[in-house]
Length: 443
Image: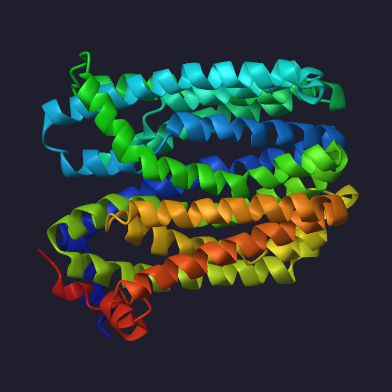
């Protein structure tokens, strides 16, 4: 194997250079989104205690539904469309304005539903201020056109702005959070950081890319809604098992139990998030490649299975073995009940990595949107049923098992669907040799 030739092949290939640039930028984003909060995580778990930490986690899980609703399916559908029309300023201007206006309409709907729930149920009404302050993250996510920057393959803007929001959050936490009674400031600080970053991102998108903002036609808005529908169902279904467990657990138990579960879940989310730079940086490239040649796109996806599967598998094994040490180090001895939860969830990074490649990178780019959304919808229903059965009986252990079973269901069914379509992704010989044949792909 000629390592020098491999490196040279990568550097000479413009597409791979773009992917690497985006990967580096998104690695910074991962640090901002997952690693940087680990600085505040041990501090918050100890200062707030399981009860208040659990309340914040419960509110965050609840607000996630409205983030999904306003994101709709644009995170992938609009990203793909922008990536295809990168050179057409008029077209991307049309896409940008129609998506943002649709998001605005979804925000109005979200706020109405949110308010009705908050003041309609005493469990929410008693801490209404916490929920409204947490709802600020919805505003920030609407303003921040991540989907646009990803479609234009300019991930550096996402990285810089997310880093800004997380720095604001991190510094403010240590300044303003001193005892459990300060819990109310945690969602306020988080929302302000995201809103500021989102506003700057919105301005950069318009100014730097010279977008022409004009009133979109009804047909354009309808088109965006139609294109994003199946992805929206997919993301909402993902929410049914990647966010709902905390919510359901809070309905059947109390904030302390939620705190035990939330600590382990957030560690797992952070671990799975280490693969985010790879996944998101290759999505626009795969979309463009498959649009030109499905065969070439599939070859590239096979390489990604080896890379993402190997990396995530290693992470999962480490978490399982060192679960006790990780909980004691990051959360403290008062979260000993979280150790068993972390061990149950330990293999989620591997399952999530594989299901992401099978589902997002392959099924969505091959336009199997409906099939993918159906798999996730059934998975979401499965998780809700399991969580409602297991949460009252086994509390945090029960919802952890529900989460694991559901993710196994998604991974297996996305894989089997592709197999039935004649798409054999687990061709390890092709994937392994392809990694070392980059020197032949220079342009």
